[in-house]
Length: 335
Image 1 (cartoon, one colour):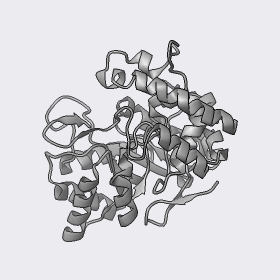
Image 2: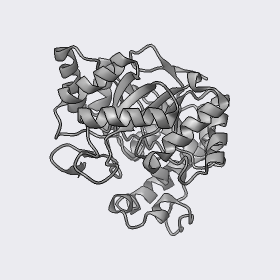
Image 3: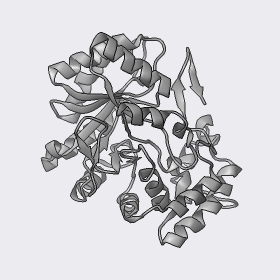
Image 4: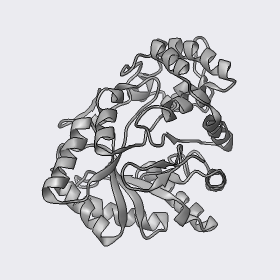
């Protein structure tokens, strides 16, 4: 395994991270344990989950798996806070109250005494960033958290946080987890250059565009019954991505994968891994078969010609369908 530095932390992580969102929900605990064991066996050491996945069930199953195999110390374990978890005005967010409360609960569910990367799941304009950073700094100082990170922040929001950390002498964000795939390349405009400048690790989520880059969706072809876009047909954010331009782009991408003797999903994952500034894309396998397919992306080399071919289909910094869903003002926005 060709490990990569996690920003400027000195920690090394695998070039693919294991996303644990499906564990305990669409993937049974026993199947989840098997997927985790297989990932560890091949050298994947970066695992990502959230307190909101399955209302905490993903953390529980991930923690149980690591307790069973005794390999917690082999893993760079990341989780998140922010998403609403219940009724009441204080059951979400990035306040000191919510952060510390949720960290304690995540530690119990994960069956560990520390979280390697504790991430804010979305930006929050309703809470001052220094309020958030002071709470996170206390968790780092206490040893309950090793590093802190963000997810789906705009470049300016990360820079604002870096300034606040420097000004108030607090621990700084070390990682950012943005949506990034062949269909959503907008982070190439400013987020990636910013991250390279300030030593921020980029940990892309949805490198397969929530399945759109697997090739199972296409012109005149019904999607599999268990596909995400079939299970959640009423969600406007999902339906907004099931559009003709996606099918057109997939038709153009498939020959590139075929020429390399790999699946479209393997090509798409290899492409993300090969992009400048990217540390570790996060895969989210629901089955062992999906994991095995994803792992073969590690054997695919993206050449300069491949890159030019992709750029002709989706130009650098371009977008086919949007994946940014965050709060950049008083209300959630998609950009």
